Image 1 (cartoon, rainbow, N blue to C red):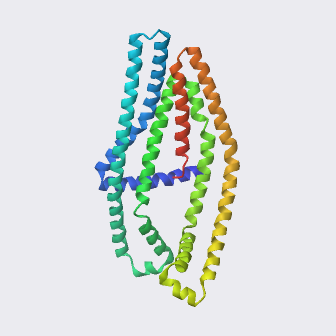
Image 2 (cartoon, rainbow, N blue to C red):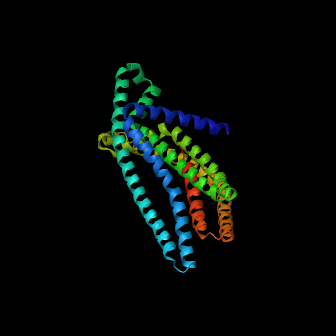
Image 3 (cartoon, helix red, strand yellow):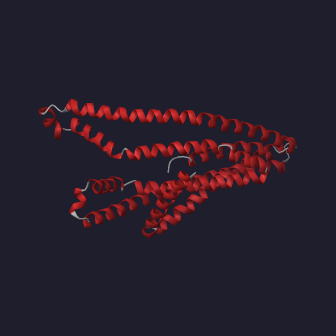
Length: 316
């Protein structure tokens, strides 16, 4: 738990710095994208309610012998569902356009800041390995890393809005079943988060070694160095070093994969068993209440909650 809280604190701090940088340079883009993110996050909960209303009204129309009023009601809900799908597509398109423009502007802004910082550094910083590595990492990642962090923020915010709104809908229908559906995937999500974080830390620690592998490959495969490699017969040496480093990486990765599989298997079985139990309970509940539309809404809500919680478990 302490490790989780420390990680969340570091992630929140990075998000705050990136958001402040973006807001200072592009406030209109940020405000627009945040509004689009919230609206997109509300769409799934509205779809669940409309799906439930469509099935329920259609079932009532069938039972009542195709009464014109009930048929019209079902058709209106269907039209509303179609309009909602159109609105969702427009929101996604607008969000994509704003994100593309923001990525271009942010990349230029970060690149200029790195150039200004590099121009102010002493020559000794370029001769220090640690300082030079930081400068090169910032220079190589400036084109995508800050925007990637902001993209994670928007995805996280959208998934949280969706998750909260869907859970509110479920709780309004049946509080104990909604709570059951919400809590069911959490153990699996926690395990995924734990191993995703471990994988991220391993890859981050490998950054210098990854550059070393790239350097070995560059020396052996590029024309600028091939003459010296052949002259001093260094090809087999660099290939051997590359193989050794690769096997070290593979040993760590394969061990992590085995541990992750063994840890996630019982949680995955539990989550799916609980989801199946929730569906059975939803069937019994909707039959008892004579509300067929709720069944479609519950099934869609179960899939949505599981999907969003698994997305939130991805490494940040």
